[in-house]
Length: 247
Image: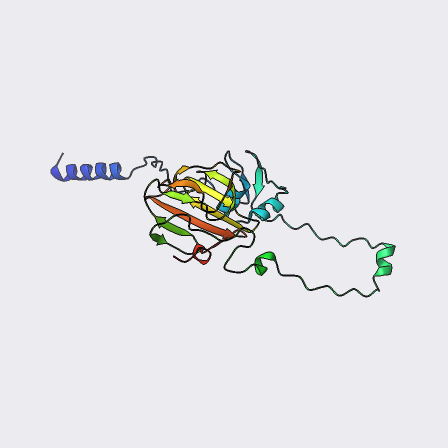
């Protein structure tokens, strides 16, 4: 075999090794969520609560309860299928007129009173009526702030305290990106969350008081020791600095 022919054979062998028809390597993308909040339905998993599913999907827990006909105290069970969007409106059919309705039709309608503003609209912007003032959940350097919540740096094992009176409605690590998480319900409007804890000291269903130690700061689900703290009002995230006392 001449040197020129040998070089052609070698080049073809290299190209075959680099490309060829080999099956693709299976890649596991660890950044892909295990759950998909924008799916129409969600199957309840062990450890879920209605509040944690509402938090993860960005919904008001009362909306989820209404859409799925779940009454207080909002008990859900593994395997249960929950709707994450409003059910489709039933096809509107004109009612069959009755003699009474026909007779009443010519009668003038009473003036409809103007609707009262909702409780959310009536409540003052700087406070949450019904459970008193807020307190800082921990002390430390603010690493980030905004409607997405506060990141507060600190030391591992540092005290994490309830920011207001309430009841623990979730504790666990089922929400991607939050690590060991606590969600506290303060009243019908307000929830708060405490993420990346090293150790959780309260049980689900426990009542907590403002300033009570509920966890120890850690780095679960993140790359540094910190507390991620959020407040949500009627399911919508708000800037905690609007509620916490000035430093």
